[in-house]
Amino acid sequence: MMAAFILAFSLLTLLMFFVSYCRSLTASSLQKSLTEEVLDVTGIQAKASGRDYTRVIQLLHLCPDRHEDRSGLQIVGTYYSFLNLLDNLFAKLSPAVHDWAEEERAGCAHFAAVALGRRIALNREMLAQQAEL
Amino acid sequence: MPHGIALVIWLLGMGAGVCFVATSLIHGSFLRYFFLNLYVLFTLAVDVCRQYILSNFGINSPEYYYLYYYTDCLLIIALFIAVISLATKVFEELQLAKFVRILAALLLLGTAGFSYAVVAQSTERLSTVFAYELSQNLYFVGLVLTYLLWGAVLKLQESRTRIVQMVLSLGIYFSAYAASYALFNVASKYQVVQYLGPLLGCFLPVSWSLTMLRHTEEARLTPARLVAVPR
Image (cartoon, each protein chain N blue to C red):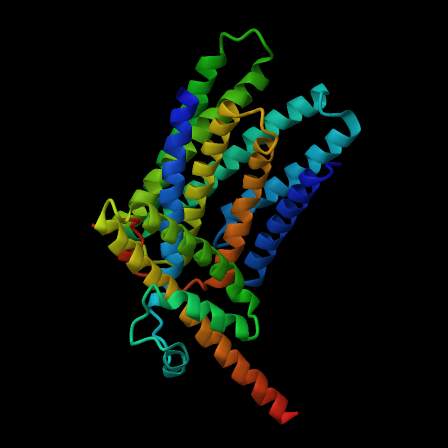
């Protein structure tokens, strides 16, 4: 009984820290605005929404990989899946959950779009280097 | 030597530890996060010692038994000091770093005194029981301190990305460790549960390395974005 209580409590705190950790990742990218290029390519209208995430990820796969981004994108991807699950399970019970999840997914999409901007810049750099050769 | 999944986890843990210390050195942050590096270096040294004793004396030997509990105690003290070092960074702008250090020393002495009082009546070899008891109590104190530290990060609007993510990593580690401990008591028959502890041991160096690689010391974030459910 005590072990089950500790398990439930620690899982709750684990969830809280995981959400905060993911928010700290997305928050660090929120200060960076999206370039015109990224807005054009992704079709994002000024501010990213949760629906943009999948499209941005598809575009990311078309660009050369930057290993610095990989782990962050994986964690944010896990967070995005968790938000979808939460939305599917609880949105009907509480509309506030849906609003919160949507706002968070928008943060995930912005994070991915910033990474896309970096990859486009890297791509241009590589093309310029090839042209020089 | 471990084999199979245990070997993969052991190698991952060693690799992650080396990666964190190397990253700190390369980024010139070794001294700034000295106690975090010290903890990781201790875990590396302890891992090597344990494997040496394990391969020479076996898992049921008294040598391994004593080494395991004494090094476990040493590691939890190092982790406790690492938590305190992060707390002093959070409180240094309020000129409270010295106060935090004194409080931490008193807390450590208090926990040691309490642990001694608990085991004083024991008929077993006192130092081993004391080491075990101190590890358990310090682990609990570390867990509570991490929660308090997270509260302080939010209250003081800490914006340094590295500090925030390191504290959050500690929170995830302590919570996951407590969950795995409880799960072991609830469902010890499942073999997968026995790998959770060693896997979690890899988490801190992996997560701290990623923080070091991803963010510079100057990186800042918006503190209001950190609360899981905004008020």
